[in-house]
Picture 1 (cartoon, protein in one colour):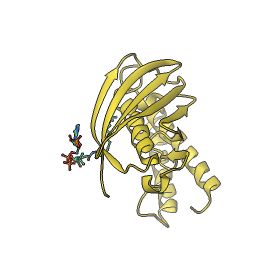
Picture 2 (spheres, protein in one colour; picture 1 turned 180 degrees about the vertical axis):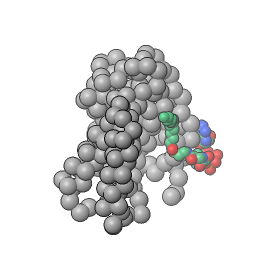
Picture 3 (cartoon, helix red, strand yellow; picture 1 turned 120 degrees about the horizontal axis):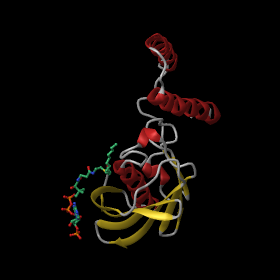
Picture 4 (cartoon, helix red, strand yellow; picture 1 turned 60 degrees about the vertical axis):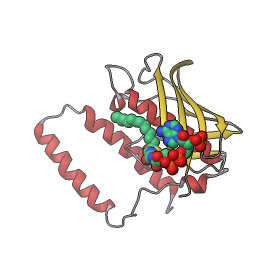
Length: 189
Ligand SMILES: CCCCCCCCCCCCCC(=O)SCCNC(=O)CCNC(=O)[C@H](O)C(C)(C)COP(=O)(O)OP(=O)(O)OC[C@H]1O[C@@H](n2cnc3c(N)ncnc32)[C@H](O)[C@@H]1OP(=O)(O)O
């Protein structure tokens, strides 16, 4: 990675921009001007491109007690995961905003599931179990509010020959709002 601080500043600005684009109420002239300016920023960035959004691959993350998921991807929430034995967790201290809204004022359930899936699969990977998600059972127990601190939690429950069972949950302001059980299947590559 070239320079983490500089890239982190860019990604933070990008996340703020995506939020501003979603909410803006400026007039058409300003929208057009903004679009033109963004095209020139895009050209600046595309001068040198990676084939993929840089990330620590799951394979590289095996055994790492902290894993930074989607740090450089402005589209998905960034999760700082921590692993401790059979448990994994990640905190989003400010929660998520309206970009991820489903029902009015509430987090979209699919986003909750993405967060849980990311953590459960990474926990298995932390244990060296290279896997894909084969099945996910989800229960949405309570509404998950926007702008409310979130914790994602996972526990490695069972390890079979090819199948790994990991439970996951989303905790919003101290209340469990989503519970999940994942069936992960070990793959060679
Ligand atoms: C804004 C809106 C956003 C919305 C977003 C919504 C988010 C949603 C988030 C989504 C998150 C997405 C996350 C992602 O993107 S991960 C990527 C998505 N997942 C995949 O692409 C996986 C595709 N499937 C496969 O590659 C194969 O089917 C696999 C590898 C899974 C099995 O390969 P294979 O056919 O060779 O396996 P096998 O038959 O020998 O079986 C091996 C063992 O596994 C057990 N087994 C197998 N399958 C299942 C199953 N389904 N439920 C329960 N158990 C199952 C089976 O019983 C056996 O167990 P055992 O008999 O040994 O005990």
